[in-house]
Image (cartoon, rainbow, N blue to C red; front, side):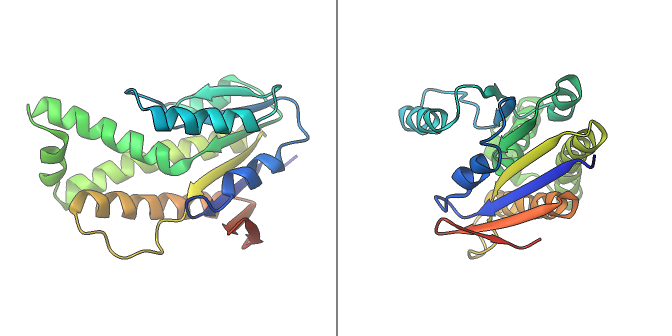
Length: 197
């Protein structure tokens, strides 16, 4: 049996998460990997999380994490995984690295980002790529299925600040990496899924 990786991409509120959930709705043992881990009180975000949780079948397991995803997949066996979403994984990993740099330099995250030169940006990007490559390899080697939701971030204008440009570029590169490894890729537009691979 060949491992199946599906990527579901689209803009904000395009219906991509609902479509992704539908792909696994008939399976009982699904692990929903929620990557929007709350690190500070945020009522609006809590409401979003509750809305997502209410939509999912009660038989699904929820795992809140964005780090060590490959090891998690290796250590568990489910009928399938739904990772929602890839963009948040990248964001969380990026800011985790920036926090470390800021602490080491006794500065702020914004200052740490501004100090990044091309080599440092490449290093950050490569570390994030390595995390994703490890996850994709783990899914394939353990012969499991995974549906990955991501945001299509490359359709807007070039962001005005360095931090957002770096993140936008990494999002796009990670999306390409996942799409290349995926058996199927869907773009969801206004609630309508369009198969592009």
